[in-house]
Length: 527
Image 1 (cartoon, rainbow, N blue to C red):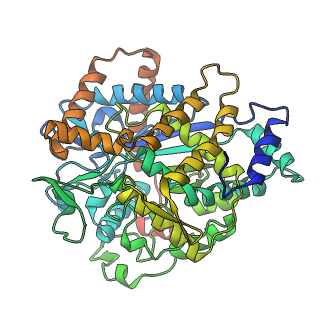
Image 2 (cartoon, rainbow, N blue to C red):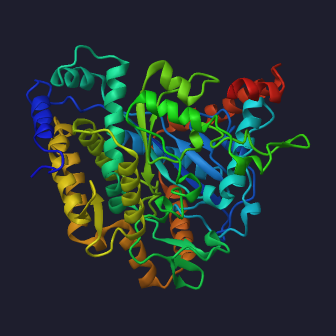
């Protein structure tokens, strides 16, 4: 069975790849992960301590940094050709980090620990250099615009690029005259459109944030959640509150429309958003009495403020903005941003997650991907939010091209269509790991209780724990796990230590170098 809405052309593309003589053409894509975790105290409160000195400089370290808050650690892996190598590196990073945390823990879930108020969430600090100051001012602006509580949510981002050999074969299959950056970017944007169409399936299969602590909601009464425990709210059928309208799909950006029909349109719309003033944000103040509150009063301060499920990316040069990097060289890889931090896995993600996303990327790039209009984008956004809020509701219907369709039927079609790509990714591996990962996901369609969100709620109900109690218990379990885990790669640990020390020196050199004033630096960067 193939995905009915894709039809014969998708089957033909798969068959053409298989018949190209390069059966392993999908094998060897580059994979990387960015994983966020809050640092918390032994009693489950947000850590107020600075970023641990033993971890180096959050500004200049390539693997260990911070995101919004000084208490929000972000671990960034290099890219690898296999998922197991990637997960091993992420495991090693966790071991190294835990040895610098003292009695602190890494929070095991996406939704944050109990937090007293917005003001108790410390902004990430990057030192006195111009780039360091800019990063902190940017985060202060995010807090003013959306509230700091939203920025305390954690996630896992999967960075992926197809193997170089794939593009030549695909160009031949599509009868394209040559492989250049325009062709590659065009195909990546086809992927982006199909991810918008079908990416809600990631919430259903891997969402693991159906609950939130009462402190996350604050004084809000419009959240629509139910009380599970005195300090725990939940949505009975939710999969990922993180990716719902309570999390990253916030109302402040609901009117923002960024086209993924082409690289030019994407850059055009994003450039307009980062250069168009907003009266509401202007009212917050930009530079008041010499104090920078935000970088500017535009709809977006910077490109990264746009909270998308998936982003086209290119590694930027020093001082180069993301849109300029994309215009210079086209799309280099995609960043899939829908994965919750899994409380069911010590490092917050597992190989089945990553292998599924790699297979899903192959489906999205090979399948027909018509251009999207404003109404279609709105329909697709609603599907994502509905699945995030109510993905486990029996008989749930989504909208496909203006017509209702049963979510589970649509999901089954997607998984069936992925089988051919999974078999190509399994080429040369007798264990068939990609097909196995796909089979695991099929079981979640037959049994909703096998989904991570349902498993998390079942655990809370069986133990009587609150969200905070369960998250703290899992966080302590993983701290013990990594503390007892044998170090398997001493040389890698030594490199982590050297990198931490070098990053401190790199920041010192950066801060001691002569340069323009902060105002001049910011004007040049934003210009």
